[in-house]
Length: 285
Image 1: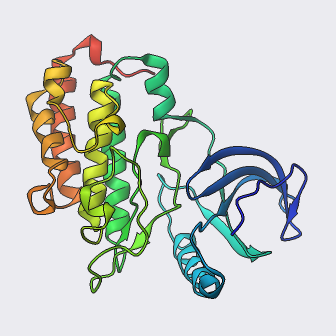
Image 2 (image 1 turned 90 degrees about the vertical axis):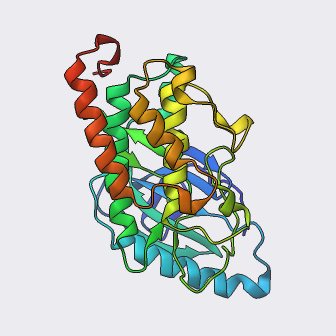
């Protein structure tokens, strides 16, 4: 499928008028668009399958339609709503709620220091909630690309997990993923072909993201190598340091096994930290 950008003013599906490009990555381009039927702003995600051959295209389109239908059935406060999907001119499109805010990646760049621990813990609890929701679907949905760039902080302080480009249903009969995508530094070793990703893969990525947020150290330069978070930032409680370390274990069986278990640990850590009243950890807002 082509990866050419749509021009401003292009009309998709006789309904969605393209306004501008707002994001671009390995799995597609995201546009801000106007839904001319409802007169609302939406996000249009153009899905790109770089390696799809002509004889595989029908299967790829069917897979897209299955997964788009799945995403449209999800309903969670920390997920943007998928409202439509279609195939036009051999291109696959998702129509989603347009989320306005700042990514955690942008906050890290702006601050140039670790972010406040109480904020990070609040976000991590929300992320654990949404992962619990995704992993409880039947079969489980593995997000596969948790990282600061895919977490949007809205003005009401609610976060959204914004990029469903590579989310997949967990197939209990598969030995590895058919598509090997991810973000170096945040993706676990099994995402690179060793085995199939499962819900514990998202726990690794969330642990890597937490490490980045509380230390300011970008893991992408040295994947799979994480110095102790507490050594980098002495304000990190030993309990949080231990939880992060447990999330980023190379061996899936040694990690925290569920997002609910992770959430419960984070709630206790946040309560203890809040009771200490450390002003340096006060939230940004």
